[in-house]
Each structure stands twice: as C-alpha cells, then as structure tokens.
Image (cartoon, rainbow, N blue to C red; front, side, top):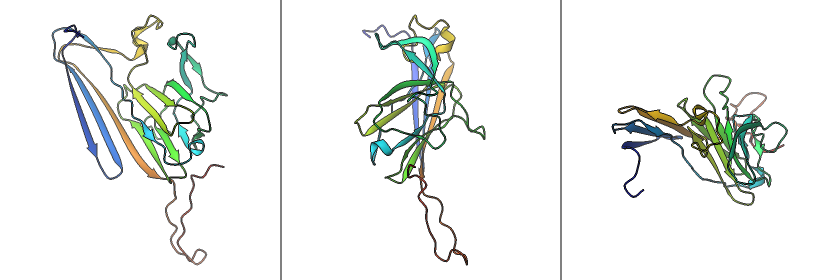
Length: 220
C-alpha cells in the first residue's frame, strides 16, 4: 500500500491440532491511535476423495446474498434459497451432482442443541465427513465455492460479506465489518472435525452373533 495502510494492527494466529479436530483462532488487535475497520475470513480448500456428484454438503442457512450477474458484485439484498439448487440446509446433505456453487450464505442457523451453525462435507466413497464449526458468534456468513467438474470445495467462515465497503449496502452495520477502537481486539475461532460415516459396531447378541458395521453415508 506504499506506506498508506490505514491502521496499526497486530494479528495472531493460533492452530491447535488434536486427534480428530483442528482449531484455528485469529485475533486482531488495534495497536494504533485511531479507530480501524476489521474483519476476519478464511478460504480453505478441501480435496474430495470420492466421486464428486455423490458428495453431500450441508450449509445451515436458507438465505444467501443476491449477486448482480452483470457486475458479479452483491446487490445489498438477500434472497431465499428454498426450491433452488442453492438450498443446502437438508440434514442429510445435498448432493453436489454437476452443480457449480459460488454463493455467500447469511442468517446462519444453530443446531437443535444450540451448538452453533455447523457446515458439513460428506464423502460416502471415502467413508468420512468433515464438519466446519464456527465457535465465535461474529461469524455470520459462509461462502461456498465448488466449481462443477473440480474435485475440491471451499467453505469460508467469514465475519463480513463480500465487498463490505460497497455502496450497495444500505446499512453498513449489516456487512459484518466492525470498528476497533485503540486497544480493542476482534477474535475469530473455527473448528474442523473429521467424523466417520459408518455407525458404531453392534455388540454380539443372540440375534446378532457377529459384529457388523453399517455404512450410513451412501446416497439414496
């Protein structure tokens, strides 16, 4: 920025790896003397191990940002996803098939147990799935990028929408960008959790003399 960066900000990234989870925490602190705008996002790209059309995804939202097809920029409005290929809230997941996705989802819904909004990628051929779990309430948007024909998918947990300083947004407070006063900080925390698509083995009984494992991830 040729020396014209508008603020002084310290950014700390902490990564914690466990047996089945990876926690990523980003903290931004305004160490300058004037208020500064702040937001955090992440653009992870996940390789698909199985057959792309069979992969299922879950996004906990029924609305997305409307895009002006002429400019490729947001219109400042949201639209319902019900009845469209962008509807990804089904509990068992929606097959990718040959559909391309490039959408930012809004109004993220928490689970039945109040455990926050959870996105999932389920790969039945590989036999496992991946959960993306926002752990801070300021993560209000998830952008899904999955080009047809490609063997990868990106689910971005973001505090703010695309083009947050654009004139299309009637209320700047709706964009997710916050103004940090000197000394204030913004924290963003996400967990990735891998899980098996197979049920737990059944113990031997008189009616079930051998232990079996049932794969529940095969699409119907």
